[in-house]
Length: 129
Picture 1 (spheres, rainbow, N blue to C red):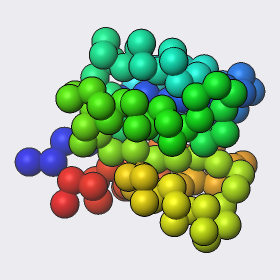
Picture 2 (cartoon, one colour):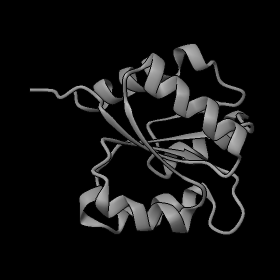
Picture 3 (cartoon, helix red, strand yellow):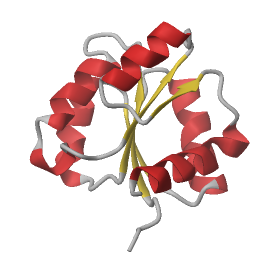
Picture 4 (tube, rainbow, N blue to C red):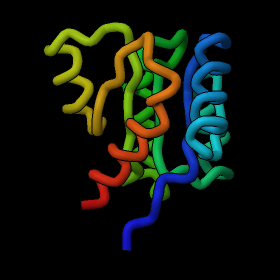
């Protein structure tokens, strides 16, 4: 039986974007969200937060999104957790590269806060097929 999406680990270094996305996912989407401001923080938070889905900014200082995902994938609990990248760089070659790293999808920034949760829920459901 497919479980609905409930818990999202969201990694984003920009406080304004963090706030908008967290509000959109929690208030509009009814999801539980744990925000990390960078890859290192995400690696510390992840073991204590059983995320159903990873939502990662691509461009971050220090450890970028793809590196963060690779490091999370090394943890047995997250080896198969669906991941979605968010980025302003959505050229087809960029999107193809990010998907080749194991992302379900790439969401363009700026994103629509009113549809973000539904988009993630649909992607999560499709990943369980």
